[in-house]
Amino acid sequence: GAGVSQSPSNKVTEKGKDVELRCDPISGHTALYWYRQSLGQGLEFLIYFQGNSAPDKSGLPSDRFSAERTGGSVSTLTIQRTQQEDSAVYLCASSLEVAGVAETQYFGPGTRLLVL
Amino acid sequence: QQPVQSPQAVILREGEDAVINCSSSKALYSVHWYRQKHGEAPVFLMILLKGGEQKGHDKISASFNEKKQQSSLYLTASQLSYSGTYFCGTETLNTGFQKLVFGTGTRLLVSP
Image 1 (cartoon, rainbow over the protein chains, first blue to last red):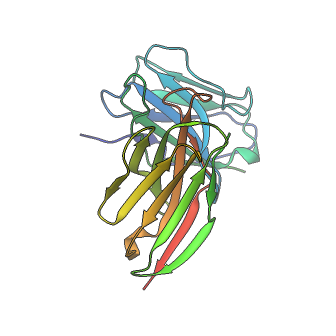
Image 2 (cartoon, rainbow over the protein chains, first blue to last red):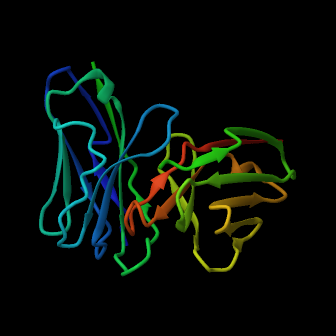
Image 3 (cartoon, rainbow over the protein chains, first blue to last red):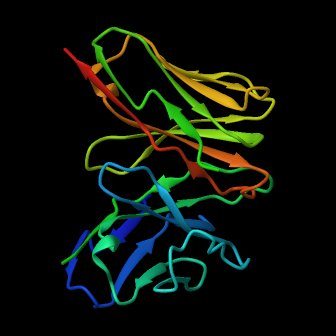
């Protein structure tokens, strides 16, 4: 089946504008993660959705960042009033949800965001 | 909470071996290893669970030392295709199950 897809693949925006990044997880995967990766850096956890539970938002860097997941499938990461330091690759991953153990995360190709 | 990876970078000639370490300050429940090639998404390599066996496939294997709160990734007889950045992701009781905290990565370059 299809893997994790993300759109857009690239986004250039002006400082102060809002952006929306979309993630379509693998069908049947109930866990969904958003990460940020700055140039040459590691994976920074942003937010985690697990089934019907309240999302773990502990990694969101500021209140300008928010995410939602509709119908337990597609997720949208929104960045309001973008700043230049928001420029990075935003990666989405999904996994099966199995009680008691972290399952393999399948990553999408990412959205490269550039804030001018 | 972020695990520490060492070395930060390593250059090998094709056929040489390498070890990448991942150390945590917290008690580990599982360790996940991923490889990311330049410009691509990370790809899963293997999971090691607390109390589980050493894993491996092909010439890449890994171990999990619960006492030392550490995992090591072993690359033997390296191939050009092994080049990339290797990340460990750790699952601890502090972070909550199914949530991984990734290390800063180890850049591996295999040259002919």
